[in-house]
Image (cartoon, rainbow, N blue to C red; front, side, top):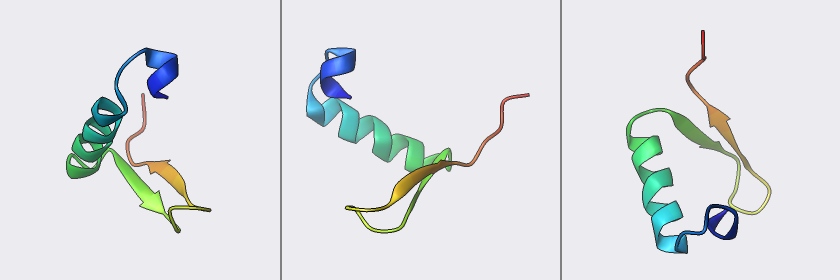
Length: 43
């Protein structure tokens, strides 16, 4: 993701943390085999 958006990996980690705190995304499963679940729907 960092390469795709041309930002530092720390920026990606910080943004993911903010999304988790705002209850926008949730991690399901382990770090290795899990996935991200979106908790909001676009209408």
